[in-house]
Length: 313
Image (tube, rainbow, N blue to C red; front, top):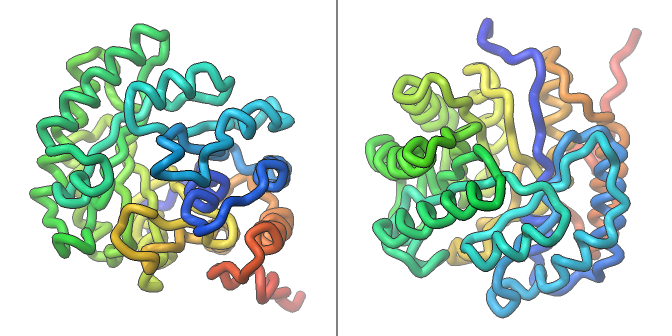
C-alpha cells in the first residue's frame, strides 16, 4: 500500500472512444455539450475525437466541427487521436492538443484487422510519424500499446510478446531524441486480471524505469476497477477512463468489447483510498447521466444509477 500515488491524472475518453463505439451517429452539438460538462467537473484532460477515415468510423466524421465548437477552458487539455500521417496533419489544423502518440499492438492479428499492417509496417509508419511530429514542433508524447494483456483473436498475450512490441515503440521514440512521456498499457478488449496487470507493469518498470507507466482499462468482463486498484497499489498515477463506462473498441471483432472503466467510479475508488484527482465526483455523476440521455440508453456504470453512499457522522 505504500506505493499508492498522491494524485492521479485522469484522461476522460468518453467523447472519443465512447461516441465512436456507438452504432448510430450522435449530433455534433450534443457531443460538444458533453465535452463542456466534463470540463466543468475538474477532469484535467479530455480526449475529444479521432481523426480517422469517416468511412471506417462515421461517428467521427464531424471531428473538425467538434474541435471548432468547443468552448475551451484554460485549465483543461482537449486532446485527440489519429492512426496515420493524414490523421495527424488534419489534427494539426484543429486547435486541439496533440499528444504526439506512438502506437502499436501486442497482438499481431489485432494490428492487421485494426490498422491493416504487419508489425514491420507499423514500425515504419510510426517512425515516419515520429519524424513528422518533430518537423511540426511536437515533442515527446505517450506510447500506446494496444491489446497489451489479451486479444479476442489470439487469446492471452504473454508478457514477453507485449515487451517485444513495446520495445519497438520505445526505440522509435528514443532514436528520434524524443523519449516517451509515458507508456500506456491498454486492455483493449477487457482481457486482463489484476495479476496480469501487476506482472506487465512490473516488467515495463524494470526495463524502462524512467518512463511512467499508465493504464487504459476496459470493464468488459467486470474486472476493470479491480485492475485499476492493482495499478494504484503499484503507484500508477495516470489512467484513461470514460464517463458512465462509455466506450469499447469498434475493431475488436464484436460489440462485447464495449465498456471502459467508468470515470466516476475510478474517482470514487481514488477518493476512498485518499488519492486526489481534482475531479468533482457529483459533477461527474451528472455528466454520466447526461451521457446516458445523449445516447438514449443506459450506460454500464453503476455509480450514476445508485448515487453516492452517505456515511453516518
